[in-house]
Image (cartoon, rainbow, N blue to C red):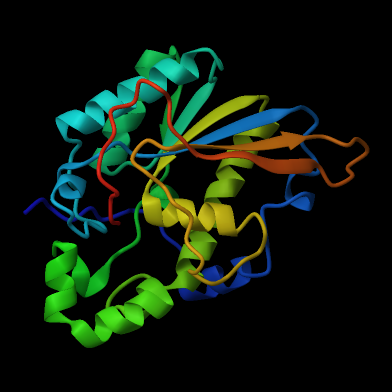
Length: 250
């Protein structure tokens, strides 16, 4: 079993509660004076994904397929000229980000603990079918309430707050002048980065997010600190050269 990743920077309950009042929509980006493209990727296939394992904070590295997926994503992003890649420091995301940055020709690579994966509680390290067999009652609730039903898992309140904190770091990069930003994170946190743009606070519905699937959030200024024009221009896009893989779990 791979070691557990322990982030050094997280939010306490009081801080997380304050972030529930915010969203990463039009007003959030009002002060950005130039067009910004934000490409958000789930990491490439990990050794845990290949085993259909709930990874959570267990620090699985990329599989060989995952490395090829990251290279394909980087090749696709090359033509978009990314200026900075910001990523989760967990091994599967860090390795993806390093490959993407090198392949896409981006010299600036940063990491943020706020982009780490959800803690999957008692399901961590279990294959999906084993978790369902071992905890049938929890599995039933899991289908209705997702990770809020799993003992020891990170709460939706915390996930929303971390998504907003991640958006703040991305906005800071844009405020400093970046116009093309790549963010490499995980399936769980990526769900909340999407939800937080519209102020949604429930796990369901989920959005399909494959390994190295690319989503694009675009920001265009309206001037005079008016709310920006924002839109999801793509969700879970797959570059044509990307090696396919099975649907991954968290």
